[in-house]
Length: 123
Length: 106
Figure 1 (cartoon, rainbow over the protein chains, first blue to last red):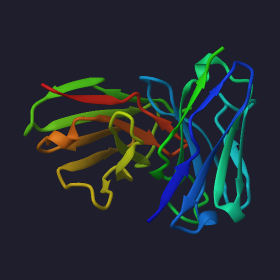
Figure 2: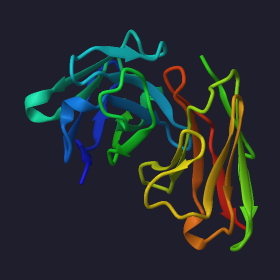
Figure 3: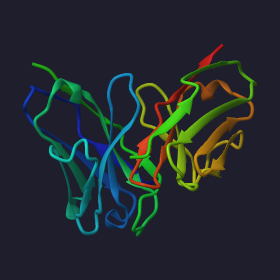
Figure 4: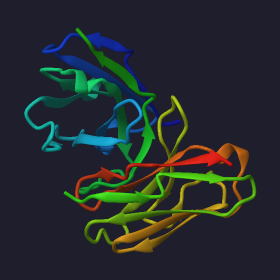
């Protein structure tokens, strides 16, 4: 079955960087784009951006444009999201989510989602 | 950016009730809308995509409708497993989520 397994929880200090991984299995990794979404405690879902896994091209939400980098390793079927210059407001659960439609040039709905990675930013 | 506004924010209902959640987009998103269910400590689960297409395995008591800027998610007869938070998502122009609707036990 299609599965996304994320790396474990992280605790970081303000100004540091964090890199979250998302290991995909059960499908052809390069056929579907991968999205990253975060959820601050008690808040809604916030889309951060996506990566075209086939060619590595990315599109980021303007809010994160200057601080985020999404990459992938096709040989390891793993996607990565790195967020730099962390601040306390970045404390959240970070999810990877597969774009549901294979070989698509546009976005679609997200399915499935990884289990989430809690990133805590605290001095 | 397209803004998504859900209502109500919280909904108190009983088992067996018919429940409707509304999602409004700040501009037309045609039918590029999905609905998700999220339970505490869990990742969102896809329920409906393209505004009205039920995801495989999702109970038929869930249904979606609408187009353009106004959409609804309906649960025809609320079951104990349905108490959760529901989010709409537009994917017409990148992606945006609504603020969520928490369905509570009355």
